[in-house]
Length: 451
Image (cartoon, rainbow, N blue to C red; front, top):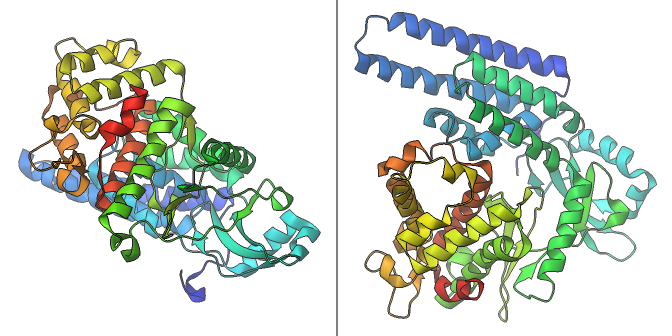
């Protein structure tokens, strides 16, 4: 956590302030772009491309630094675009936007306290709240609290004042900034994605919805000792404050997790990926944010547990999409190219792809579903004699990207349906989880009951 001197005294939530800041940044970046084009007029094509990339990177870094100063919803918009915008934005832009994850400076307690008093009123007297936050994000920060009557440990997720009302304005600012600075394509697909990000933003600040979802997932997982879901404490919840039980744990990538025995890491890995499988095959809804900050690991000699912390990015899927996703995973389970091609039927995005291209796309899916199939499909040494898939050795994420980039399908798959993007992001996050803890698992057996 940042020192007190690094904390913000207030947030710029005024529409005028934010518009002026972004307009100034956009104008300067646009001027730089125009100047670069003028000076490159008589350069070779190779030199033009080199200069273009250099200016693009400089523009992106400059604009991201300006966005970072504003905090609030516009930072979250940038973070979401970094996560989901790789199919629309140049790599230089997504690289710059990814740095926003490191710019979550806390708001000073003197600025938070009046806001908290306004939200909770006399109920705040029941609590002893630690002024030092245990977590900060672009839309909220989290403070630990003790219930005075019984010592119960709680956390308060406190949404920054003015953030929710600034979302639509900030979305317009962000979109105009991308247009003015030539950092994004002006296409129908991009507009659709931008509208989807807008919807996601509004769901992120809907704490009543998040409370409902948290309770629902707690119900899904009740009785399974491998998982911990915080309990919502209704008495201290408001539209802008979400209260739940404090749940101890350590980060997924902490040395203590890395030093566990192989058997314990395997079980943690199996539990983490089983969540994604059950979301698709049983519940029809998925927590789509792969950020490691949404998970903790609680170490116990008898049963290690995964603590699930955040349910603000839940997506529900229609039955047709779920059917297609099930069929794709089933084809991967059998590692059958023809079956994978057939699994694409019945979904509009796949139907518009030429028949000659579908096998290339199917091969991308076969690599992506490799952990669910028998060991015969994996590279030599990735699956051992016990049938365990070695995630760290697999380099699966890199191989999927390589296969997609080499395939003719890549030009058709450059803008996938947003629903598939959410699902793929979830599995990428789960695969990364497995790789980080160096898990070795047999998912062929785990998935078999759903096939």
